[in-house]
Image (cartoon, rainbow, N blue to C red; front, side, top):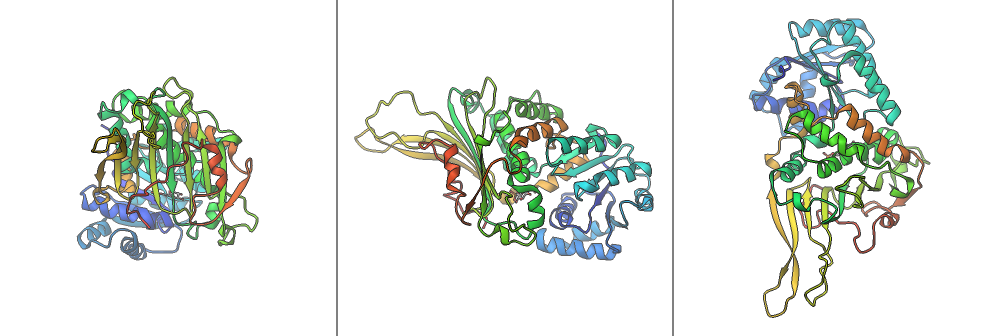
Length: 463
Ligand code: BG6
């Protein structure tokens, strides 16, 4: 078993990610008795420790379900603060002093990727990299070339086994449940292939727009923001082969292998959209062609999936906030009963937000004389309050050196290879009205008789 990290250092301590995700995760880890090591925040804000504690309190009030007095007291006793510039060697000397005798510090880079190299170099020059782990946030580059560059930089100072690339979708309870459901039941495997499955759809709908992140969003757009990472990781979990055991490397091997088999996208596989009003957001160019919506058709060139389209639809300012997967089976080969065939083929549905749902759609006979049926669903439902938040789960796993739910360089590069040909303005961007399902052009990707699935149409979902 790997050694547990004996200190956590998070860079960007006064930033947005720390505020929204890291402090809530730290308090929660204390509550679960998973945090007993020094936690050193680093930033250049001219602050002191008390100011950082105030920031932590505000973060917990807004995003952490409130300040838990006992847990916060403990967190406060573990918290340290180093204020300094990442280009200044003395910043790293002070970090080293705070680390004391720690042998396996975990460095969390909650900072823009343009600063990764500086920080990695600073840690190396002050002899702080030996035995350490480093956690980096997406985006891992802007395309295949820059992602390789970023990796080369990190690899100068850290071996691949010490690099933990966060894709928070992999830390989500319902996402891990896809893997669990597929490989702990016999029900799915016999039908999980091109002989029975007609198509797979994933919709990641967000009712909100860019929430003041216009400037940042201009740098990415929907394909870089969520398709290259969250959506392709879902495709990997849905389509991969059974791993050789549950070790981190076995899981990463299979996810990577699956992504290697996904054909690179061509312009004909992509429809991009932009919601009306996006260009009026602060930080957005008046003539921006950045997409806030993307519909994508993927093909997996494998024995199992040949000829089965995987459709992905993501977007901001859509009618609901909901992520859902629909695995549709083919229709039966012959029509035995004299009734209009149910429009809906059999399916398996995984809801990944709002309530956690796994459902199986079948035809069932209506009581009475005729052989007439209804579309019915068998639903297994879990509730979100049992969920371990993804960031808490991933931080705990990184601190234990467990890599299963983090990206590995090969998988990340394959994901860039897939989207690279359609990044930027290779395809037109169509306008759509906020609160609709994106531009009408998206329907051209999917045959008429199938059509896009409306996720969460039956649910109480997050507003
Ligand atoms: C982030 C994207 O990675 O995921 C955001 O940058 C998106 O644009 C978010 O809103 C969605 O995450 P979740 O967990 O709310 O589905």
